[in-house]
Image (cartoon, rainbow, N blue to C red; front, side, top):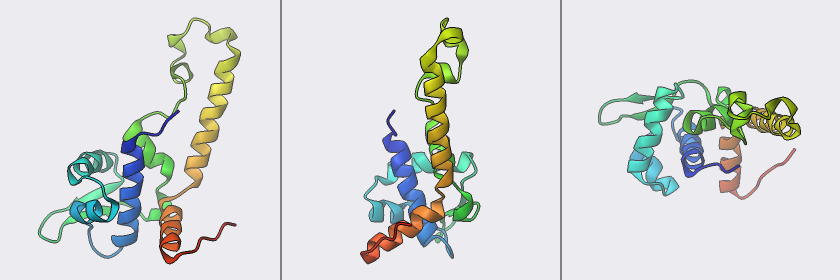
Amino acid sequence: MKISTKARYGIRALIDVAIHGAENPVSLGEIAEREAISEKYLEHLFRQLKTSGIVRSVKGSRGGYLLTRSADKITAYEIIAALEGSLTPVDCVDDSGLCDRVSDCVTRELWTELKLVIENYLKSKTLADLAKTKEELSKGFVYHI
């Protein structure tokens, strides 16, 4: 299973919003400059993130994007699911009708358990956690507990 550029860049961009958007909206141009991501690509990502209710837009000369909830209420899972869809390693986990061996397939259980492990891990990591780590890295130190 691979996480696409869409999800990787989306998380990076939202970490930027979490760090810089506490008081004022963050423009896509600012995010693009700090994160070295195309502004055009960010437009596409933020359209999806807005539709999924993770960000909201503010119009005007000082406009940009804000999180719809505090960063500690937004998980990595929610962001990735909004941008990627299902995180299922194999399609039969979500749709048993895709395989006629589903009733006696030993590996389907393995893939189902893997999906749950991935989902639970990503649900345990919030945008606030990631933003804190980024801020610590920029200061030159990271604490692991």
